[in-house]
Image 1 (cartoon, helix red, strand yellow):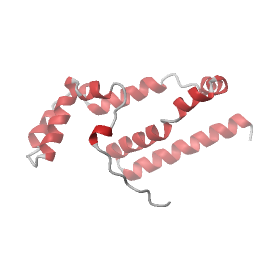
Image 2 (tube, helix red, strand yellow; image 1 turned 60 degrees about the horizontal axis):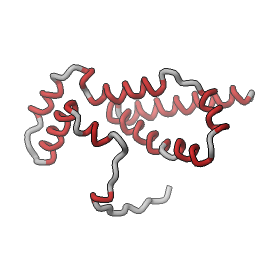
Image 3 (tube, helix red, strand yellow; image 1 turned 30 degrees about the vertical axis):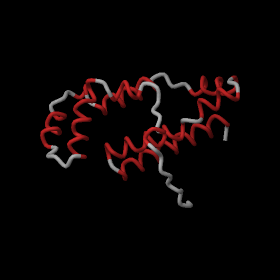
Length: 141
């Protein structure tokens, strides 16, 4: 793969998604922001890690993400997705498809942070095999 050029971007040109600022400013993100601030400032991070360790799972960042994934896919029905693809306008389809690459990267980074590179690779390869098998079964191959 060819090396991609890295461009500098002024902070003022960085735009976040709808809702991102609300999540960052939420009460539950404060311990994480305090930890990041301590890390950046070269401070001892142990007190901040201890504060995170004391949080119940349901108040942690990883729970928010895994819960969002659960709700996003608990009623997964590929036939409905196929029906939508067949009936969406080109413009609407672009809006749906455009963020998928970023979401896939974000998901892989999240899983990698949780379980490491080797386990992430095994999970992603398994997922790709399942998707391929599903496509083959649907097409009658």
